[in-house]
Image: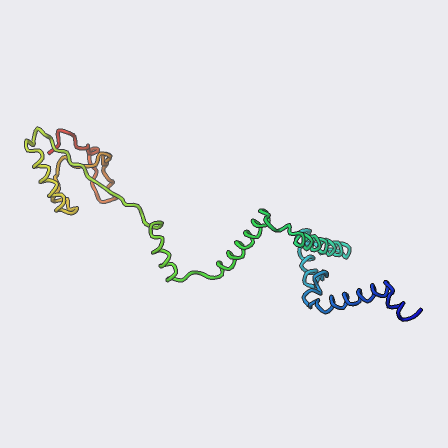
Length: 212
């Protein structure tokens, strides 16, 4: 068999082409791709699997049980990588919700370690003052004027109102008759132990006849 016949042999062409492809693949393959098809279980991961088993069953795992835990871990890792390669994590609402929950848990742990200072709290209060503002409270006192005793009812009412406003809470400037709250209950006498002598009975509320 001459050299020309050997060079024309299809098997030789196949071997040469295969060798070139294999060499090209080895040159383009980076160090980061070496472990793409390998699953390595470190000693720390084995200890974590054993600790999870101990917390669940309240005892350390046997050698057979530990081997089964490692095998299930490897199988789970294989399924996870295959699912990523097939794109099963894309546009999946369950995966998106789970990742969002994990991020929320992580942010909660980070925020719990750092307490806000006084300046941060004051700034938050200024921005959300309406959430911490107490509702307004209004109190009033009713004064009844008898029309039969006050021919100039509007003028007398204006005078009494001016006296009440000028008094600013002083009972000396208020009318002594006809004023009182409609919900006030009869006052009963206190005991001698409180420094007041007993009275014969309860004090009644003002009526229409006692009006000013």
